[in-house]
Image (cartoon, rainbow, N blue to C red; front, side, top):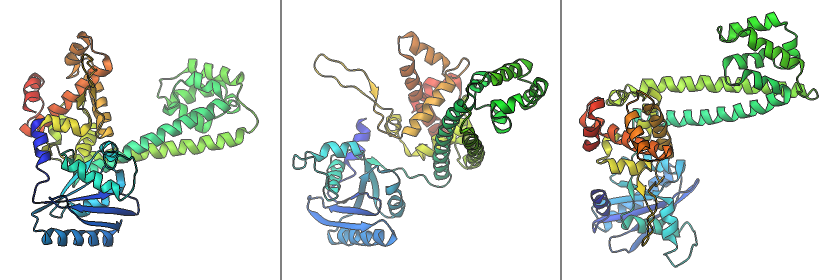
Length: 417
């Protein structure tokens, strides 16, 4: 960790113009500080090309007037508002860094002993944090990695939207035909959704005789469901306690939701197809795919979130970027439990968690390691986090050594990272 900290402290020196920006949706507040801590400029500018260009011109003139060799520009991690500015500056002779908003909040009160928050105060606080060495280098994905990040985020949003639709569907079906959920068990299956489209309510089911209903179930389920399930559904329809009044509007909404779910499914398939295509453009993707249990979607998401594994020098750096670095709160004789900081990319942690679940199964590459953690008395969730951390380290080692995964070389790979 000392090596990482030393690199941070060197980011600002006596030849550096320190520039910080407080991000907003429509306008930004810029600030610049010289090595002697004199404030040389403070400027508000708009979130567009003319605003960015005007601010950049001010910075260049300031740097030349003070004969400073380099420029560091820092900002808080603020989601999409910062991205246009990041891409504008990425090709400029300036180093981009970012600070954790939690650090800004805590350091803010040291400035004047007040929690006062203003657009003029925040850039100065960000500058203080950077000077203390608590800023992280911004990793901007480019090319295929940038596409993979956008595709992963789009897939994540679509899946969340689809989950919300399933919840709405469940509630509406319960109003119209509550027994349907007891008979069909899983409303996400193709068989259940076919029946909801074509034979939604109890009356529609009873309009079919038992033989017809059996044939329908066998056909749509490809033989998995037969006479027993048809008999149960037929009897449930005869004794249903679903609502009768206002049923038409409920049925219309169910049909609309089913169409929206189908649209989400098609979009997810399209996104995953694009992921596969762009993954082929990543030179080291096949090295990560050589790990049994990691599929195309997982590897595409991991590369998209990391942006470039080759950018990271050590495993500790990468773990911190993911928010999987460990910390404890201890004082005197009290020794706190070690936990992960969660101060990194949440989607990256989620992908690693599910990757860990896939690899700890019987026959999986991490099954033995997981069982060893459990044998030591570690809770299952903590053992999974330990596996996720180990997986990330192995991935970094595979990229650095340009080698495919070999099960017998786990420890060597871990040491190489």
